[in-house]
Amino acid sequence: MRILLVASLLAVPFFANAQDHNTYGLTDSQIAEMGETRWDQFYAGKAGESTAAMVEMNDIYGEALRRRNDLLEASAKQEVKARVDKLRALLVDIGGTACDIGYNIDGGGTIWSPVTAHVEATTEQVLYEMLGGRAMPATHLTTSAVEKQLDVLAKKIAKTHADKDAAAYFKYEAAKASLDKMRTDFAEIKNVAKALDRPKSDRVLGCCKDYAKMALGDWS
Image 1 (tube, helix red, strand yellow):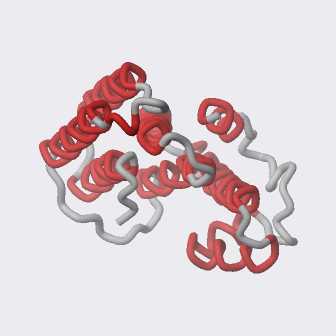
Image 2 (cartoon, rainbow, N blue to C red):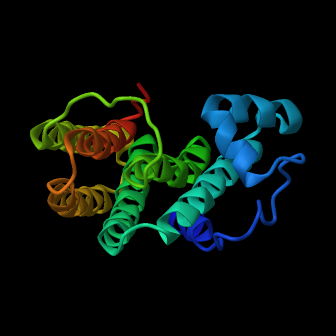
Image 3 (cartoon, rainbow, N blue to C red):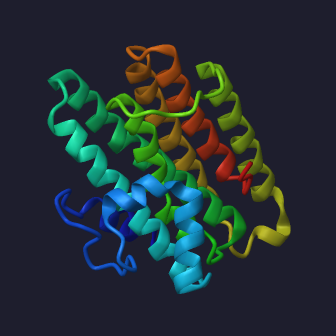
């Protein structure tokens, strides 16, 4: 499910305007300008709060942010474009893999569909600042803080594996492989982040740490 959702997010051309979605009359720029909280409130007020509606809401928001970033990226320097493109692929991948782990640990759950659909929006929010957009200051983080959070996730995977009640649904080998993939992605992300100034690096690292927490069901 995650692969199909993420693939559908990435397939939308930047010049489309809320393609194949009901935005209730709002354009991409209006949706992006609203910000996430106001957009969520607006859309839920129109479409309700079913799982399908939340997936659609997150799809629309992520696509609007992606197209905004694509327009900014078109006029950016080549080195910025290359960095943004690489980070986009890595952040979408590490976020989607975190969702895979969370879904596995929980033994399923419809909540993971809208969470997965939100990965693009989270990624594009991080990239917006690199393309010259304004962003709130991020908490200062080191790479070791992210690595420690991944270690916490590893312990949760081991604990779930040892839980006899989870044996019927938990796919241990898949979880270990997914965690290895997150670590591999993060190693590449660290290399990219080295070239960023502190505020941008903090935002990238914060995103990675949040994804590792999200896999534990921690949304804080």
